[in-house]
Image 1: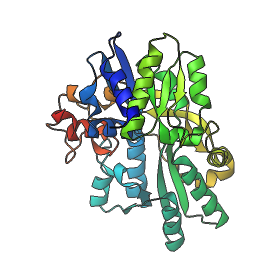
Image 2: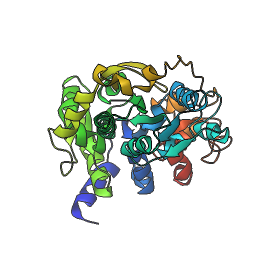
Image 3: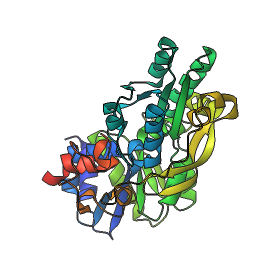
Length: 349
């Protein structure tokens, strides 16, 4: 154990201050903290709570219903990342739609969907665009490529979201945020610094044991001052200015819009949609997708988990009716989901 880890661990284990609630915004942080056994060394007065940092988890039921409508009613070829396949819609998941004859392909990048459109000129191909600032530039690049190639059989169904306004909506849910390193690798430090000026504390964290322990130790030390703070604890990846090329690409192709978040409702200005210059590639406009009023399973407490109001284990169906093999809610489906992490690791810690 090197000196940095020893020092950070000592700060954490010896904390004797008031109750401190830290929100792991990123689902990968939740999984890594469990996997590394970090929760085992936390004193009782430090509580880690999960947040809305899993893009699949915060995608509303409406979006799944829209995708299923495009697949079954419009006979579109859907391209999606694998995590989305088993997320429950109002009546079924995408996996259920595929069982009914819908053609749904798992792809690794949005450009794979562009290639599918080029290789299948007789089919309408729709890419299901779900994600935060980390994956949004790749979606924008795919739209630009489709436009350059004149592919009129390609479009995207957007559910892209941005994090700053979500932090604003959740600022009373925790004493400090553990900001997601991969998102800030794109956006930089500016949003976090602005939040600190508004009284919202947090640190940007990496994903190794050293980086996570350091970030938690910094939160503990800074919290003792009683003043709002921000620290970039992931400087080897996150630069103050972020990824300017990625942000420029997003600004060129997309613009802000209000967005529905599972559990959080509509957060103004927290979503992204295609600009008018690229409206021909907007699946909602192209196919006149009807308004959906999705209904999640009332037994599922995913929404409360994403707001830090409860732990996954507080949900009555967790680990019983709701398991990774038979998920009731999105948080049990995704590899970044809090319920998935608690099911895989939490019961043994």
